[in-house]
Length: 186
Image (cartoon, rainbow, N blue to C red):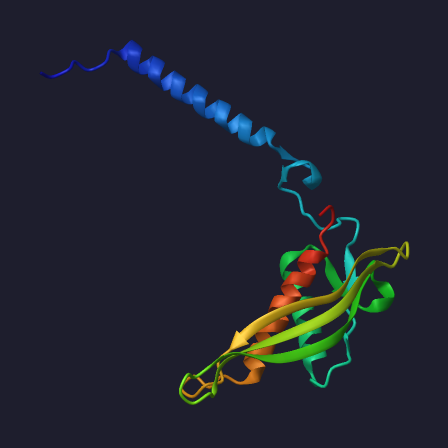
C-alpha cells in the first residue's frame, strides 16, 4: 500500500525542526571556541602576537658534520616564515632571538640483509640545545636541551640513498618541531 505524501504543514514543521537542530548544533560548536587558546578551541594564533620580528643566527656546530648548522638554520627560518606571522630580521633589531647549538649527529643501523649482513636501513639522529629569548625583556621564553629528531634512509643497492638524504630529512623534522615548541600557552 502506498502512503500519502505529508501535508504542507507537516513538511513545514519538519523543515523548521531541522533548521532549529542545525542552529543549536552550530551554536554549541561556536561556544566551544574562544579567543584564548589556553581555554579551549581557538582560531587565533598560538604564537606570541607581541613578537613581530625574530632573529635566527646560524646555530653553533659542535659536531663533525660540516654544513649541518647552516642547513638547520635555513630550515628554521623557512619554517618560521611558513607557519608564523613573525618576520625574520637581523639580530640587532629583533624582538626575540632563537639561538642554539648542534650537539650531535649520529648514524645508526636499523636493519641488515639476512644473508649478506650488509646494512639495508639506517637512521640519522640530530640533537640540539636551543633557547628562544625575548630581547625586549631579556626573559627566556622557551629553552630545550637534548632536543632531537631522527629520520631513516636506505643506503642499500637498488635505492642507494646517501647519508645526506637522512640528514636533510632529520633537519626538516627538527626545524618543524623547534618552531612548534615556540608556541605560547602549551
